[in-house]
Length: 373
Image 1 (cartoon, rainbow, N blue to C red):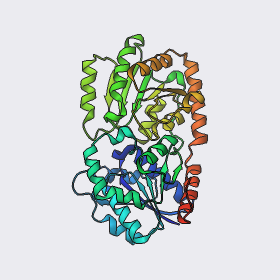
Image 2: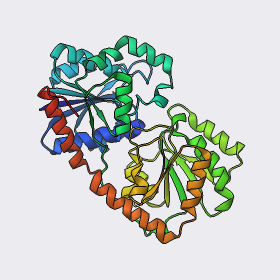
Image 3: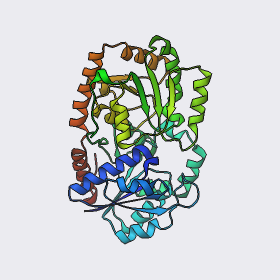
Image 4: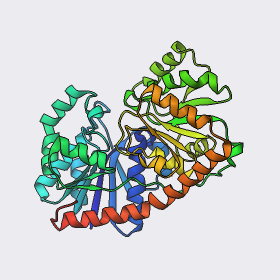
C-alpha cells in the first residue's frame, strides 16, 4: 500500500504533531510501507531537514497567513505521487481542502488525525475563523473521510460528538527510547519542568498560580516552562511571573531532541497543566527519561497513578498546588522509584513499532472498505 501523509510544518515549530508524523512515518517505512510526507517549508526546516528521521519528506512554499498553510503546489504533487490512501494530520488548514479534493476525485480512503483540534477547549479558540473554514472546505473534508485516528478514548468521544458516529481507531502516539545519559536521581536538579507550546490552552498561567502557593515551602526547587512561542504568549506569562512575584519560576526557550531529553533527564518532575490534550507526547518522553509526571485531567493520562509513576489532577491552581506539594515532599528514593516504573511502562507500551503495526492494520481495513473500530 502506498501512503501519503499530509501535514503542516515539519520543522521544530510544529512541536508534538511534527514529532508524531516523523516517528510514525519512519516506523511505517521501516515496516516496508511505501510512504511520503508532504508539509510546509519554513526557515526552520532548512536546519531541521538534516535531523529528520521520518519517511521521505517533500515541503512546499507557503503563501499568506501561517495558520492557513496555503501551498498551491501541494495538490498537484499529491496527485503525481498517486497514493492508495491519504492520512491527514491536523485540520483547519489548506491541506484539508487538498485532501477533500483528492478523495473526491480518486474515491480512495482518507484518514484524518485531528490531533486534539476537535476538543471543546480547542474549538473555543478562533471560533469565527473555524466557522469560515468549515464553510469553505473543512466540512467537505470531514464528509469525504473514510475513518479517523484518535490517540485516546477521550479524543474518540470528541470526534464523534462533533462529526457523528464515524469510524475511529484509537491508537496512541509513540515515543522512541532516549539516547541521552540518565543520571542518578540524586544528581538531578530539583527542578519542575514543563515543556510545550506557549499557548493559553496549555494552562501555564494556572501552573504559575499553583507555584505561587508552594514556592516558599520548597526554597531549593525551581520551575521552568519552556516551549516555542509562535503567538507571543510567553510575554503574558513573564508578566504574570512578575505580578505574582515569583522568584524561582522562569520561561525558557523551546527544547527539542537531545536538548529536550537532557532537560527531562536532569529534572525531578515533569508537569503538564493543559486544559485539553488529545495525547501529549511529552508525557511518555518524560517517562522514558525516568522522570515522574504530574498531568492535568485535561490530558488522557489517568494511568499515571495506576502505574505508580505520577499524578492526575484537575487543571486548577489549588489541585496542581496540592499535587506539587505531595511530589516535592516525597523522599528522593520514592520519586526515583516512580521514575523507574514510568520508564518501564513507557518503553513497553508506546514503542513506535507496535503503533505502526496497529495503524498498518487500520489502513488495510480502510482500503478494503471495512468499518473501523
